[in-house]
Length: 151
Image (cartoon, rainbow, N blue to C red; front, side, top):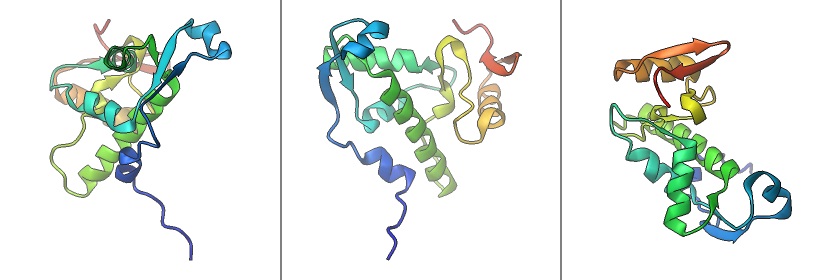
C-alpha cells in the first residue's frame, strides 16, 4: 500500500531533531564567515512569523537574526530558515482552506529588501492582495514586487 503524503501541517511539526547548533563549515564560511550556526526547527520559524501583527512586516533575514540571538550563535542557516518559512506558509494556507480563522500571516514575511515571495501560496497575486488590504503599497520593479518604503 502506498504511503499517504504528509500534510503541510504535519511537515511543520516534524522537527527532525532540530534545532541543532554546529560550526559553520569551510564551504559556508566563504559566504557567511566563521563561528557557529543554528539549524532551527520549522515550528520555531513559524512561531516568529505568527508574532508579526497586522500593519507590521518582517524579513527572512530578521527571522534569522532572532533565531541566532535565541540560540547564542553567529547565524541561523539561511537555507533551512527559508525552507521552513515556506513550509509555515503552506501549512497556514492548508489550515485556512480547512476553515481555520487564525493562521500564520505568512504574507507579512518578506524576502530581503522588502521583496514579496512569489513562492508563497497563491503567488504574487495573493500576497499582494493581502498586503494591500492591510494598507501596504506594493510596487513592481522589473519582474519583482516590493513593499513601497520598506527598508
